[in-house]
Image 1 (cartoon, protein in one colour):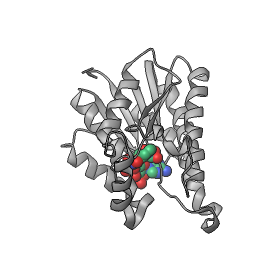
Image 2 (cartoon, rainbow, N blue to C red):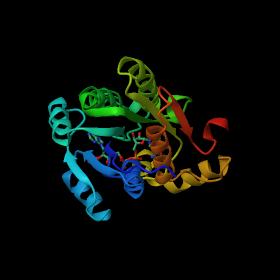
Image 3 (cartoon, rainbow, N blue to C red):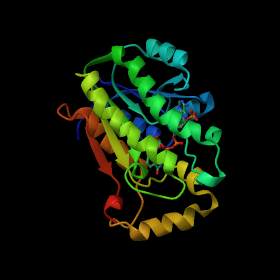
Length: 239
Ligand SMILES: NC(=O)c1ccc[n+]([C@@H]2O[C@H](COP(=O)([O-])OP(=O)(O)OC[C@H]3O[C@@H](n4cnc5c(N)ncnc54)[C@H](OP(=O)(O)O)[C@@H]3O)[C@@H](O)[C@H]2O)c1
């Protein structure tokens, strides 16, 4: 397993779920890790869970000033993972632009603004990793805007990999992953829907946050991978 000693990894959206699992995996492999998010409580709780080993910075990816300050405060680092998103899915007929806007904005503008303001602080050999989901590749009811956001983030990575080279940009396209986001996406029917999805998947279960963390760290560590999307979905795209 690749070690990340003498490597500083910054995770935006690192206070919970996939971001936090990536922070934990990176720490276990020897990295210095800083997590970024809006809620100070969430960041502090995450840090307590990992025995106070994390650096924490409060910032909202939609506030450009706060990103400028945050990256300046963090200083030079090696790899960035942008995991921030809000999981809102609403049927189109019942939705308003105001309800749907954060889904698109946090994912797209969040990824773009983090890249813009982190770029000058990323050391040679460094990288940026985004996360997308299968709604960007196929159709699900209620996921039209989430799908556009996920497809968009993969396109951002391909384009930024050229524009901001030699910084490498990649995306992990995740299947259904067992985090609190499933509560907001599936609501009260979470258990029922997860059981149905698990039955359909070639691997017979949904994924864990640590399985995505492993993929994120692979993309950070392999210096010949840029502009790629790595599908980690338990075979969901096949069925
Ligand atoms: N779970 C899945 O099945 C799945 C599948 C495919 C892709 N994904 C993607 O994986 C990523 C992580 O999701 P997750 O399941 O780990 O959900 P999560 O636990 O809700 O993580 C999202 C994190 O983003 C942070 N965040 C949200 N808005 C932010 C903002 N404006 N600025 C800074 N931070 C912000 C949240 O913290 P604060 O609220 O404190 O800011 C939270 O810690 C998301 O991009 C999601 O779309 C998830």
